[in-house]
Image 1 (cartoon, rainbow, N blue to C red):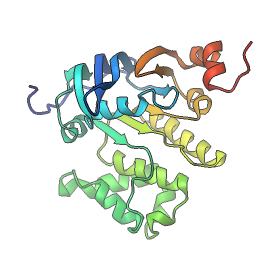
Image 2: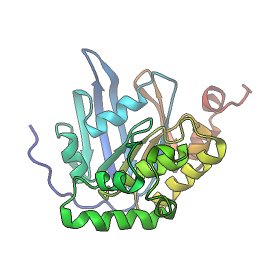
Image 3: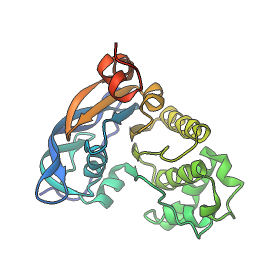
Length: 252
């Protein structure tokens, strides 16, 4: 049994911030993610693609500790975390924005940001809100607006800002552009690129595989809960099997 979460030394750019080794995880009696081994470099964007039911969301939830652990290991900055509670993983520096709208629609943007900082010491909450508002100036102009009245893209940015108030080093994003117009998808992808520029590592699931891979450093392809392929994003895009199956290209 792992002990309490301890502060971990930051990884240098390019070093692994997250490693899984033969990770198996799921929900009931059988794992959905099986023997999954991957390494995520610090300071990178990595996109996970695959068909529906491949286990992509299950993998992110396993990294954050939200489902049943069957075996294997998860190491964050060299520290084993597979038996830590989600709150302890958050304290170590892992943030998670789940799929779908996860704000409080009948509360204002300001109130949502106040709730986003609930895990922080009281003296740090105000500074955290100011920091994310500087990152996302659009939110500053809408502090009094109900979150449910924002556009889909604006709500996604608000939800990301709420998680970023805890200053994670690794950000897990599950379908951030789901249901958005092409213009709003572009806005979300620009936001993700900007986060990498600020030193964050981003692990993202996206159905808009081509758009996400274009801004990514690396790609992961999952099939039936297992790793099918991983490598530089450009190699994933150029692979004829992936182009045919996921990127809308006709078979050669």
